[in-house]
Image 1: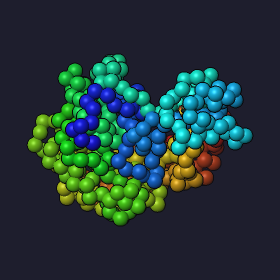
Image 2 (image 1 turned 135 degrees about the vertical axis):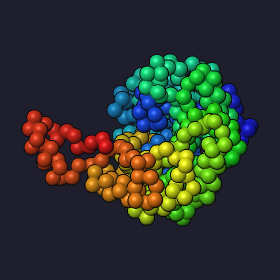
Image 3 (image 1 turned 45 degrees about the horizontal axis):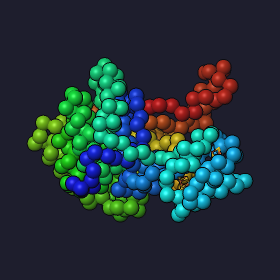
Image 4 (image 1 turned 30 degrees about the vertical axis):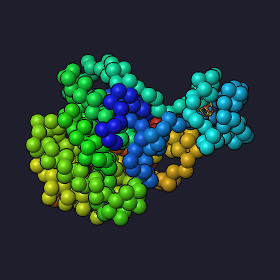
Length: 347
Ligand code: SF4
Ligand code: SF4
């Protein structure tokens, strides 16, 4: 998070190609490992720790116990209920993952050299050029490795590629100064407007985040780049997907940011990350939480549109749950659908 962070090497969790959710056009999103917040609903739990982490995928394990033999720390035990990883012993050396014949063990988080990562992402250049897309850095929180993040974005800008910084805003001003000059746009998360609720659900209040958001807006007003700001709010049942929260966020945007915010996305809760928690041996507070219905999202969207912002900037995104009568209707109108497929729809 400081000028001392490396500009030449970073811990990267994942590179996702062909994304249409992290900015305009088709994008390649680079997920940095390590986050400054710890959101209760986090959909990327493997990105929170800045260190590499071992995970076990039970369906791929053939029970050979090679991993137990090669582990120098005796951190692994295969039991009837699955692989027990003693995380106090594991030093994340990766030897077990390298030897596992079933690829059941994976080390999450890999060190990348700057030039290698640039070469990797520009392989998708043709997609960016035909779709007005580009590269997004996300996480985790990419500004935790600000030196590298800034150097990476700068190199891509020099190659004429569109860049986006996706940030939770819980970072130092110095980290923003290292990354903003090389980001063509900023995706900024606003999760909760109430400081106490923010602290309860993420581990920090939102003072620094809101201060940084105002700083980003001023930066955009006074510089050529970045030239675009999107706000993103996750719609988490009984946490962020609450009318008062959306009204409050909307009032903040209308009062302070109406001249620079191009888009306010309401990202519907999904539970696709449940297996990630299980693989990491962690419990997820939202394991049994159902998706919002389309009616829920419609009401939340209407609430956001009436909060004082220009209604045209509000966009709901993500999956919603069909109600029971919708499923019956869907089956009746699609008699060939014996499996009840289409339980989720993209809005
Ligand atoms: S080496 Fe891989 S396949 Fe063999 S027991 Fe360990 S995790 Fe399972
Ligand atoms: S990553 Fe290394 S220390 Fe950790 S369980 Fe595997 S072999 Fe053992």
